[in-house]
Length: 427
Image: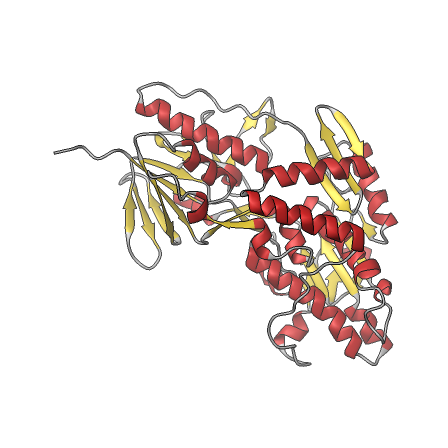
């Protein structure tokens, strides 16, 4: 009787999971990729969908399409309910299970509201395409509701936008919101000036983009302010409701549209694995990304926490892709009876965009700001996209938006909310 090849189960079709599957393309294994969605998502451009700059298919690609030529891989659209490390079994929601010889857990991260999960109703976060489409609806409906409002104070309330969190996502959302109001929607409404919209970026710490050198952080703040964004530093949020945000001693900002970009927590699947975790729920791994005491289990991407040269490996797309590729090499080494080498993250640079022609970047130790950083950011993100078609579509969309200031994905789906309904109250 012919012996079956080892079974590898990969949980998560993000950067780390997809890279791990691809890294096993010609290995003598059977690979099953499990994900709740049927697509791979390019999360760094998710804010573009949320702000009507791109249609969802431009930054997503069906997993089956991406892996159609990899004969040793299959895709299973399902949600993982649990992991039994001793039995080497993955349990699926709704019934069913998968046995494995090697397991890769790359389930990513979720929103973190620091113990205030009820804020999510009023301040949605941005992690999935569903999140992006819901946020886009909120943003566009705010302008439509302002057009219908006859009271000046009530209209101003609709035109107040608060973004909580001064990391890359918060900065990108705030800068793009300001551009939409002052350029994209200019002259489109009859009863108010869209350029009068107030966009506030709230950050609990002393500066935005704290992971960058302070001069670049300051440059990013100045670029945001040049777009009309009000940056509030040292302002921790103490409450969020349908009418605005409380900032403790710093006062309150009344706003009908509030967006959350302040924190992330590891996927709940991390709690199914034995071993230690950090405060954010990320799983502590060995230098080769395996689980202590369980070399057959590897954790990669945002769910893993590992220090390198005294600093944690950052939760960015480049690190996730490198982790996924390393996990594939580690599995190959174990199948051949060799000890896998330790993972080594290579930092090729970091960058964040603020708006059209505005960005900051650190590339090979060089600090860039303004238009040059923005062009570097643009081409780097296009190269990271999965699929040739997506790269062409994104380039064309960006070129057209750059020339015309237009955002063509501004379709509001569903009926308009009625006054007094839950949706209207939530902004």
